[in-house]
Image (cartoon, rainbow, N blue to C red; front, side, top):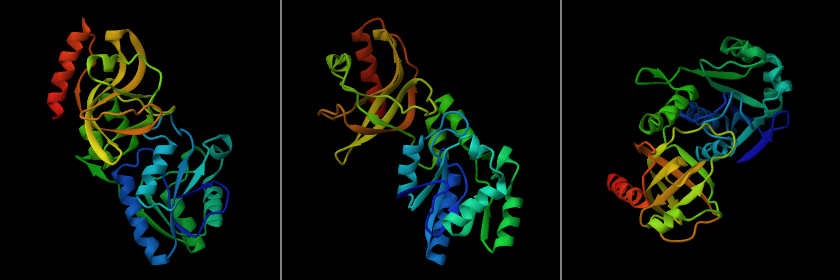
Length: 291
């Protein structure tokens, strides 16, 4: 998948308008529609996104969004920095830049899409522009899940609650955290018989509620289920926020390797135990819940 900076030349395309923070089922609906038009016009599918945070931390940071969008067969990303220059670009100037540089055959967006300085432009403005310039536009209705609008804002509420089951339903896939397994550590898990792979979420990623979760990871082509402690480790006086994962049945060295931990459901809150033996007993009970 190509990465094209905003203002540079892209390829003729069907252009997806949005932010794609969470790449949720609403976004996936848009991508599916764009893919249908791709065949019709024999062009690429491009999506707009930002290299940094548009409004606070993100459900998925740029590197994660790029991986997901590539898997969903988006051909290239038109990437903007959400800086003062971009924020002060009016709606028509934004559309001119995109339409000219990417030879847009059709725009696809959700009915709540807003753009331009102070988000003053909406789908009415977009439709008028496209009519004037002979560009097709498809404005898709909002996607609802259990009566609620599917959105990154709602996804973040589920992250606040640690409600992974509801979050995954909204995302259309399992939520994940990726990172390199840290090489430095006290190897406390190994001493308990529960060796762990510890990763730190990338800067700018919206935090998950602290807790212990049922997870899985694919290592060398094999899926392993496991348990992950997201947050501090109070039993050992460690206040750092880390995703500490034990993979059931895995044996090997993951230090320094990139892994992706996918979340299934929340097991319990983090608790400070009176001893290592008490913690070991609880971990054994946690494992019973995922097996």
